[in-house]
Length: 186
Image (cartoon, rainbow, N blue to C red; front, side, top):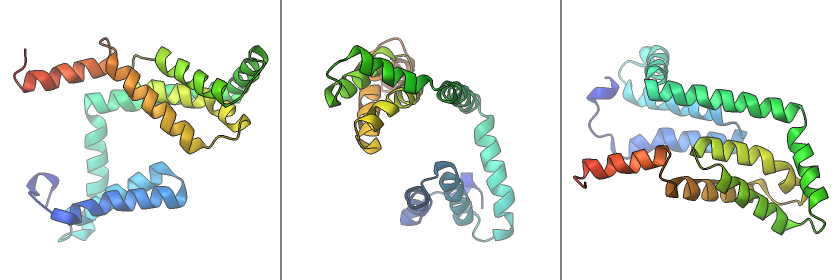
């Protein structure tokens, strides 16, 4: 039984998502948790032929990765991640935190939140780059003020999505235009 042949699995279809989320929270590792979710989905889809699960999993991952948009997103994320790793290894983000502390005499939570907001607004072209760059840049500031990473993630995601969604010259604008055209709005 393949992916295309499944019409409705009901609540069973939630098992891979719940499995992935549980694994991510338990292990604090996202990629292995996602992989476990994909394997769980393949087990559900191939329940009558369990011996095909490893091959079906690899085929599914390869077919999804081979699509043009997905491969560009994967490549873009890898390149941005590599750049951020290079900057972090060169202590660039720590130097940024020191520079902000030097420029701002009353350094505190308001400075951290303001810096998060300014970076989020300035990086308006794409959501992934906004979240990745802003998170890596302000992380040391949040650590310095003992503000939780969960709060940082919430602020960065909220600011990034809202900013990128309002700017008409990015991928979100194209997405919204596509939605409107499908609905017949001209």
